[in-house]
Image 1 (cartoon, rainbow, N blue to C red):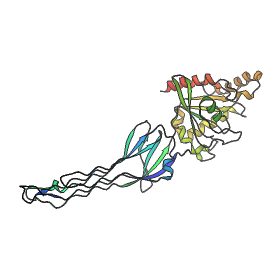
Image 2 (image 1 turned 30 degrees about the vertical axis):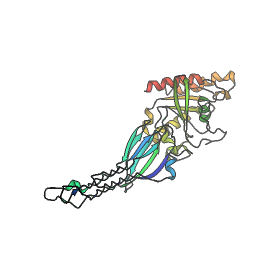
Image 3 (image 1 turned 90 degrees about the horizontal axis):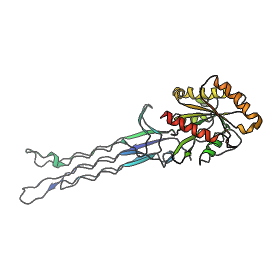
Image 4 (image 1 turned 45 degrees about the horizontal axis):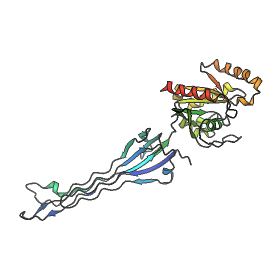
Length: 337
């Protein structure tokens, strides 16, 4: 199950209390204070993990607590520190602290495998009475308690990280394209909104060249305002390096379809306007072979009036133009780095 949003509460460990203790030592009248310090409470640490691609672990488990530090002991023994709690999260996860007034503060952005970030520090251990001995107070009978940590509410938002994001209307052929270019197996059917969650696939260009492609559920006009399904997943497009606009060549007005898709992305996040993109005409196998070249040229001519970008045409089912598409995208990705 793909889960890209969750709310949890975390609490770092409390520090252990300092100890009040007196030693009994030969030739030392009445002994002396030897209470040790308490151990530090465990931290809450987030770790980027490439083996995880969903926030499912945080959908049902809502509270995460690190271990408390252990109290100090006699003979100046410091109590063991509490064990840190490691929260493994998929790359692309944004973590926000939710304040009591509902406002949010961004704490971190998990973008690298193995990257560790401390979300909540464990409490300091208390001081044992051996720390308070002075010439005028040689037998202190007090120690300090360990510091308690606060419970924090977090909001987790996953945005898939991919080199190429597939953008198109429902039934434009995005899932079919991803399935023939990669080992991903999205659901494919002849009705709208077949894809209900984003899918990632690795596209191999050569033995040592590859890139990742994300199939984003179909966007419709008004998606940025919450219409259809696309609005639930528009944030995943923010992370992609390149946008691939997939336009059905059989559309009544392919150019208008492209303009609508582009407008929806811009209205959701104006930064989308700055992303590199490619326009791809799909389903050319549905056009008779003797008419295909003329139809592609006719549609491409309209696009060339508004953009200098190269217009590509493919058929996922007929496996036409796929190699050209892969090399073109790989080159575009390298140029965007």
